[in-house]
Length: 111
Image (cartoon, rainbow, N blue to C red):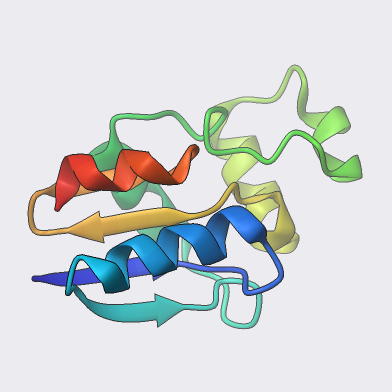
């Protein structure tokens, strides 16, 4: 099985999710979204596949998230493109679907 993880190696949840994927024998492609931010189209696509809104994909603990409390989905996506740390991780995608793996065990739903 192939899997793609939107990964931040400094994040414990992201590392734990990656470990679960590897333990399951998945062929994992790691997407370091902080170094190579996704396009707006890609963000919309993965959120739709995961069944979540951009607001649900927003990392609310980041200082820049406070200013987005009344923002539209498109404004949130634009903010994420400017500052990718606002993208909640880890997002994982397989041929069976996509999840925001918080907690990491949610990844099992798409394995």
